[in-house]
Length: 137
Length: 96
Image (cartoon, rainbow over all chains, first blue to last red; front, side, top):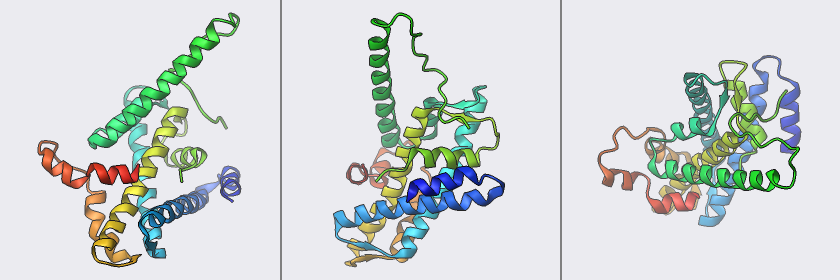
């Protein structure tokens, strides 16, 4: 199960060994995506194709991680934001447009939540969506 | 099938050069979507290549033929017709 794999990754962070578990999890997801595409088009994928695609995905994600970190570092931030991600995809117009739409819809839902929260509960502080962090260790 | 957000977070954290770099929850969702599209685009392009050749299984040869368009980023943005060929809306819609 994917959850078990990820839990193991969380515990064994000593050394670069955790990287293999992450790659395995990516491989699993890419395999499922290939299954879906194959089902739609009536094709099957050879095992080596899935392995190669997951290698490509891993190396792309690695590049994106270092790039996006560099962007946020350049903006003198320690937290990667959606603006950094938007900068990442600027060269692909369709992808950039799609990401922009996702960002706008996320902002809208966040504003709606903020408005609902502000009026009835005065004691709660307003939501600050500039620097949000996810899972803290 | 989507990429798990926890997976994306752990993977990126693993490859960050600075240990104090964090990532916004929304940014993780976006990166997860991007990686899903990367994988889908690769799978779809290879599948189209296989279909063109009349095969019923996608092999590494099919993938190799589409690898260049997949990996090499677009160098210029002037020629809009070139862009349309490289990443057609239908291809992206299939991927989406």
